[in-house]
Amino acid sequence: MDRRTIARELTMQALCQLDVQGSEAEATLRIFFNENTDDPMVLKLAEKWTYGAWEKVRACDDLIASAAIRWKLSRLSHVDRAILRMAAYQLRYCEDIPPKVVINEGIEMAKKFSTEQSPRFVNGVLDAVLKHLKQAAVETIPKEEADQ
Image 1: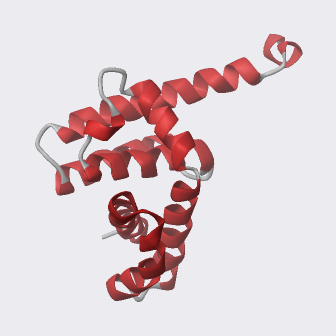
Image 2: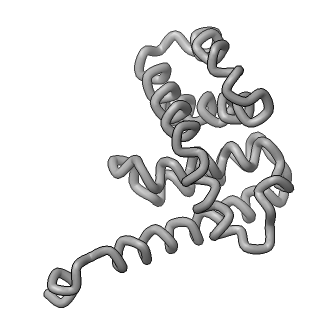
């Protein structure tokens, strides 16, 4: 399995822990990561993505809520919510990761860790998140640059 995929799976699991236990879980995350990988790159990415997504959880939740119009975030399973938070974080804040990769990895995690319906749901929400982000980027370009 790809090292970045492993890091994403650890991130999703850590975000589930944070979702359930709140910030109190932060104290045990280092232990969790070390018990599940001895690869320094995987550890670094999992920590970066976990702490980054948790720090920006409100912004990620707002993106998800604007994309999942008929669903309240509180009604989603912890797993689906964690997958969406991680992916929304990566789509918004990790410019080095192609959006197609983020969405595909989110779908694959939903297939592996969630229900039969989750992959389609995750795909739809992440597609909508990406559209919102692209639209917001277009709207923030100064008119002179957009006209060129």
